[in-house]
Image (cartoon, rainbow, N blue to C red; front, side):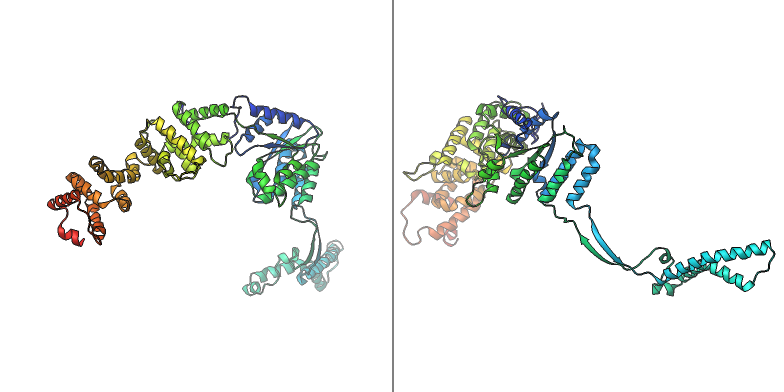
Length: 572
């Protein structure tokens, strides 16, 4: 089976034994079918499965109701009332396509898209337009005289009065002559530069208008506009008697306090304006919403109880139930073998669950297995129990935002003041230390090194350099030569020695150095020089030191090997 990451989409079936989510959905459906309740709440912590219950609810009521989903988080940066009108308009339009024109009318009126106003215009007519109109009237009149003269000439053979006939023809053709003259003038550059009238000005009025307007519509969408739009959307001319809708106002607990209060008042308005056709379902977290609604002297839960008198609660998961679901998630995302690693990770999750999750929720479990899967891709696959250590690292360091060093210290070895009882954190740390020690057979070095490789997402060899301080200090203090030779060869030794230098006796370091083999001495020669410099500053400066035979023998050996000299000891 191919491993896959868990998604945040609602589940298609109830994964938890007892089907508590399915039962809540059935009870909500029964209440919705009754006409007395308009607003129904679904209270639960973030990620507790409210979306899954809503999905079950839609399956049960899909034949009786049309669901309209309003995501408060998506629209909270703009006008929520405008967004409500748009979303409800879209949902009703899909159910009542024959009433789309009427719905568009109510929507546009509410949003201020249809504007009615009075307009008073004072216009100026061009003098060329006036002349052209007069010439056109003259041309119509002259046509009669021209036709009469031509008829007498061809029928009665009467002679025409030449100058009079030419005047009549000129008057008849005067509009055309004017247009032709303007056309010729338009082709002249000086005429165009002056900006004089063109031929188009004779037929299309281009003038400067003085306009006085009175706006009768306010563009701001308020409660009145929202109520009018909803009343129009649910009127008899739009919705038939059998059409019913469920408006789900989701993610109310993910928006700012001001937007929560605004939507809180809008819910009552929607319920009052659409009583016969709409039911409102509000999934929310009481802890989050009450904090947004609370004001000085009043608890936010009182506002919730007043607005949502009927509220169902998402049931908490039974321990055996969520552990069974976690095993299924583990098989799908982390490892097909949900054996010891899954069991131990379950114990760690219950003990170290993040503070923002008061209870274990499906979302937390999905996030947990996804993070284990992703982090497992970047750490070495050399450790069989790596999934347990990854789970521990995620819960304590990443989710808990604690320093990784708290996991590397032995709680039993921690010095506490007498008479002070250990707190909950110390107790959890002690239980975790016992658990990890049991899994790794008390091999502290093995699991601590791999834990550091998880932290730095590197190989164990590179991560081991971050754990050299304590073993290096202990080896120098005990003059443990084999251990020192082993540590000297590790990457990061120089940096670790620099960190522990203020906390060790340089006498012990020189004695240890003199007894190491030549290869290790060559690697640690820079640290020898630093040690000599520190001894020159502090050793036997103000008081005579007691005779230390071992120290003297070590100095003699180093001098004989050419590692140090008397001049170097005095002047370094």
